[in-house]
Length: 165
Image (cartoon, rainbow, N blue to C red):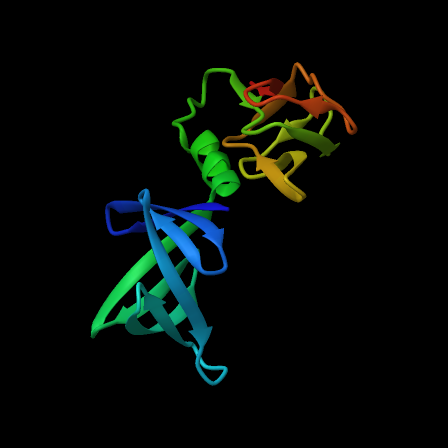
């Protein structure tokens, strides 16, 4: 499994190789990771060097206290990253927005109909990929046009599924 972790403005690419190995930005490390006493305290051995960290979930991120310093880390798997990147672009309120599949998958549901008025944040398509269901939402108010998919359809990455005008 591959993750992108962002701390401040720096990104780290983490590949989980197996239970005892991971690659951080391409460098392979031997690891041992364990929870201490059912608390938010974790013991981590990296190449036989010991670290202890307090890890707390916060909205959309993790706070990590390590060696007296507090870090905020955002951890995304590849699918989450593609979804966020696909929806992060600036969307004009006056131009047609084309909803493209951020990854290949199966259309589970299309809870809107062509011509329907919608609000920003409303679910347009539910796409299943890698055994996870992803709700693809409207980036702005508008009206659904050119509906090109239905439940049960398979889509390829970047395939246009519908438009909002």
